Image (cartoon, rainbow, N blue to C red; front, side, top):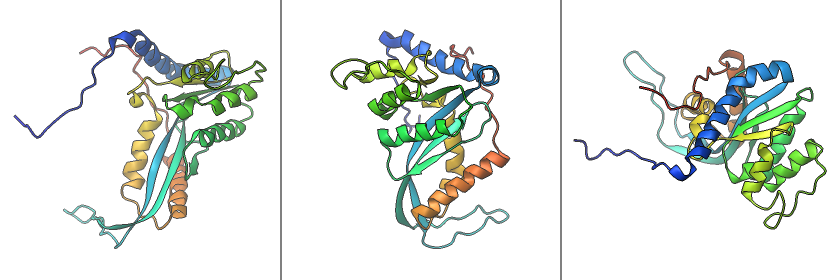
Length: 251
C-alpha cells in the first residue's frame, strides 16, 4: 500500500450521457473529415485555446549545461517580470500554429478580435470550423455578433439575459454551433480538454521553451514565443493522426 498516493476521479453524470457522447463524436468527426473538407470546400479547421498566465521569469544566475552523466542544471531563484496570455491556433490539416495572439489580457473582446484577425488572414477560405472548449469567452455576446456580422446574418439577435439568441450561454452556443454558418464552433465536452489538439502543442511549448527558458521581460517572452512558433512550423509541424472515433476503447 502507498497511502501517500492519491488519484482524482470524476463520477459520470449519466443524465447527460447521450449529450456527452454526441459532443465527443462531433469533435472526432470534425478531425477525421478535415483533410477532405479542406480539399473540396476550402474549409479551415482550427483547434484553438488560450495558454494564460505565462510567466516571464528571469533566472538570477546562469544555469549549467548538460555534461556526460549529469543533467542540465537550472538556477532555482528567479525575478518575475509579469505574465502574458497566448491564443494559439493549431491547423488540424497542416499541423502548423498559425496567426498566434499574445497579450496581457484574456477576455471575450480579446478572443473575438483574435478570431476576426485570423479569419481576415485567409480571405480565400470558404468555411471556418473552430474546435474549442466551453469557456464563457468562447460563447460570448461579442462572438455571436461577430459571427452574425461575418456571415451576413440580418436577424435580430435579441438581448443578453432577456431574449433571443443572446439570452443565455446555451442559446448563444447553439447559434455558434449551427452547421449552416460558414463560421462555426465545435465544443469539447466539459473535462475533455484532451480532445482539443492544440493542448498537445501546448505541452510541447511548455517542455521545450517555457519550463527551461530565461526571459528578461515580457517583450523578451513574446519574442521567444513567436520565434519558437516559427521554429516549430519550419521543423516539427505535422498533422496528428487522430484515430479515436468517440466510441469506448476495447481492451
